Image (cartoon, rainbow, N blue to C red; front, side, top):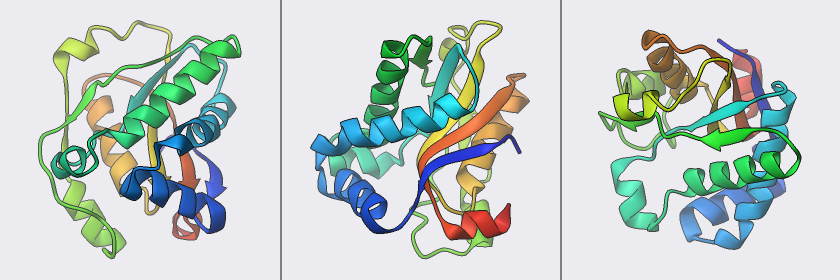
Length: 177
């Protein structure tokens, strides 16, 4: 598993902000969450960065009207560029199976739910150039099951993932690593 960098633990203000953004459409939090993600990405190297966000569940876009993680990733890339780094978001992963939401599931149930959930979009794959640091991003990493499946899928296509970055991570993640 590549290194996982999170900007905050998933509790208190960070947890409330992520839930408000993701579940209640408080999109005014996108800049703050994007800044937190940008910091996590910057810790992973010098770039240039290709940011690969975990694709949303099929029903999430319908419910929310927006890909909230995509918005956070776009903001993070913009902040990295403003700081002088090369960074772009390329949606190279797509969801090919949807095992449903993970809330309340055990680590084993989460791993089972995301097994073979992703596929590489060949059109987007062609946009990735040699020498970039491929970074998988998520808003929250709990057990690591989702990001690990994303890394596995990208590696199966011959890509090298330099790291995983997230806005927040749980204590469960710390115990699992």
